[in-house]
Length: 255
Image 1 (tube, helix red, strand yellow):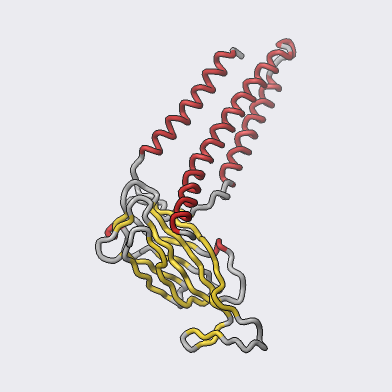
Image 2 (cartoon, one colour):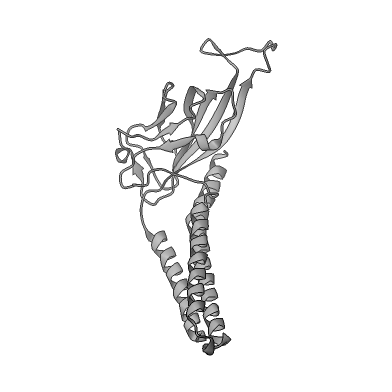
């Protein structure tokens, strides 16, 4: 295959990546994000024979744990109180195995006035903005949830949901380990190219010689490398900026 054609294909792919980066960074939209942060044990009974008794509202519990969950707006457009649905407000769904004791907003980075409403039976904590407050860019809060549980709770069991106007995807959970979709794309790409090469081998006359097969194989490898570069770049583009913003927000709020 002509070397100039391969170079043009590579340059074309790089141009698409650069154009996509400029396009997505230029989009102005809301960016509601949340992540599950720290878990702390505030009090714990050491056993049945312990003289220590933990009471919560005059009821004995075995332990009191605190879970921190953070929310922030990474977008360029503020999230106003009027943008949040009253039917599906911003709320945290707690694990079904816990006993919800209480909750409160422990930190906001701009004196944002908020309140929490606890629904103990449904294991839900609703979060409300007060008055005409809004989440500007990088504004957010940390909510502390107090609970008791007999078992260890996985971070995956905590979630946040809510309906925000112009955000059809809802509140996005930050987790850079979820790359399985891209791994499937890699597998699909390589499988497709392998099938193409196999079909080509079956249809190439022996008289054409080994040079034709080598040329076509070089083309397949070039396309594979380009596809791999695009997928890796796309994976990094989608996840790393959110991860960096998460670390920056943690740093600012000491959580």
